[in-house]
Image (cartoon, rainbow, N blue to C red; front, side, top):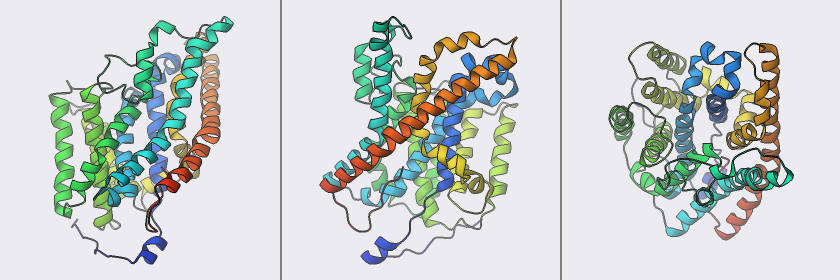
Length: 387
């Protein structure tokens, strides 16, 4: 396969404003897969074990890698939406970018924190004890509100613990202007070299600084993990935009890399390390029409779940804690009864996610976007963030 560079064009403002931008529906579907994989990982011990799922589907034990797929997807989409404007950032452009990202992250994030606060402080007033208040210190809540809980200020995660990745992503947003300035000036060949350097860096840090595991969720290792994968996603988007990849045999490429990843389960190859090039391949394939990844990822039910994946991801812990008493009915000797309880738990998760997505995530995104556009207007060629 040869790198065929797309011609550089400078459209007029009218053309720029009218030009349709890719929607990448398949990548939204991949977000659904990533969220479901992480949830299965967090639920695997207490909820899925009575069903024997851990033995039947060993890939559940690597569900923490779904967060790594999230980081790559995030870098890809953020570059698509903001890459050009941040290549020559001004304080106003950066402030608009941070406001947009905060508007996207904070409403659902704060609501799920409030749910936890209710379980810690409000529910016990009615004689019901769901969690131990001592396990949720107030300083940790302050760190969580500021989105810095995974920056190494504490030695453990409390409150809505899956939100560590949101804190790490916030760190990536702060670094994004630097990535945009450098990445936007790379030639296609330099981009390819950069992508392979990042993939090599994943291997090196896994073997050295990461102590043979990628599952670091706090401190500098978590931030390094997120930053490398976020920047990898950025370069993948720039590569996809400037190199013709439509005719590449994506189905065969994905099948080959996926086969290598599955082989790593039964060989000395590190599963976590091989997963990163697999995720990069899936993201690139999902951004190009006509292959198996884009077709499956664009399946409407999967896209619908992907659109609500942020709410789904942040609701997993509140639902698990709130439905804690249901777990006493999960008995391995009674698989049918256990399966019914699991379905109830998943139903509660689906209901909670739907309510948060429809009543909080979507309305807040629209309302805040209007006010941000009013204070930080953009030109006719600006892309609107749908992420």
